[in-house]
Amino acid sequence: MPIGERAAVEALEAFLNAHFHKRARELMPSAEALRRSVEYSLYSGGKRFRPLVAFLTAELLDVDFNRVTPHAAAVELVHTYSLIHDDLPAMDDDMYRRGVYTNHILFGEDTALLAGDALLTEAFYVIGENYKDIPELGLELTRLLAEAAGFSGMVAGQVADLQMARGSIAVPAEDLLRMHERKTGALIRYASEGVAVLARRPQTEQMLIREFGAKLGLAFQIADDLLDFNPDRPEKNGLPYILGEKKTRELLSSVSHDCETILLKFNGRASQLGELVKKNESRRR
Ligand code: GRG
Image 1: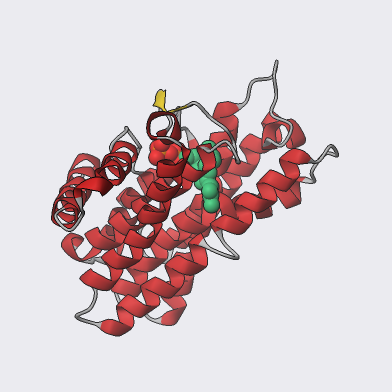
Image 2: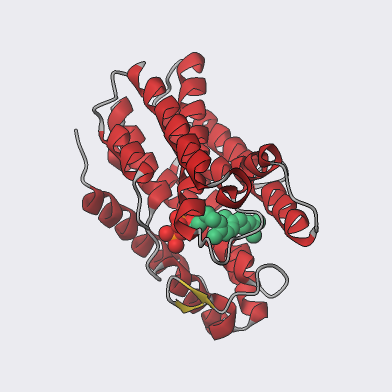
């Protein structure tokens, strides 16, 4: 059954509201700043792209949306943590995100750091709590989310990005792509792959969906680099600066085409997920 973008976002937010309402009852009053800091970043206008990937993969694989919602929420919790930490003075040192103050500007570095920690760990709580009816599914989601977010995934990508930004020599495009596959791509890959796990699809199909998610993640980042590109003040480690704008656009369409080729194997080229691939390719924000 198709799910609209708005309905997907509403399902996600209803889940998050109910979850934190319940969890906040367990907080002592002196930890109230943690709740406010977490909620500030969770509801400060994110596009909810990763949960949408999860919901549209569910549509493709015919998985019940209610079953997918906790998984989609766990992904958004990890994403939100990563943005809070990315904005900290030790990393990008940003004052604004999504047109409003970053978390640490409003709540202080200490609380922002801890809000990120709480969001990351809460993602695993959400998985443990909501998939305990079939423990092996919960366990596999846990393993895959840790893989995507951690040591060899998003954290490794972030470290590589910091190192590249600090270096003075031009970074080869190949290294930049490997970094993006981890920093941005891995979590988007997991958003899709986790649904194939929940659908209990055969291993070969799970691997295909994993590959689809990885490619969509890369396409998302390439589109982001193109949106950020300013020829007068080019970002030294941006793909358009290194490859040129034309080649970067060609790369985006080739990676998007790869996504569509995988979808064909699921008869899904005309699916909402196929639409999302196209939408990302011509994304304005
Ligand atoms: C701190 C471990 C750690 C990782 C941070 C994802 C990330 C890693 C940093 C974000 C830096 C950044 C701007 C990357 C470019 C692409 C990207 C992931 C943008 C943010 O995602 P959107 O556009 O954000 O989905 P919204 O605001 O819509 O939620």
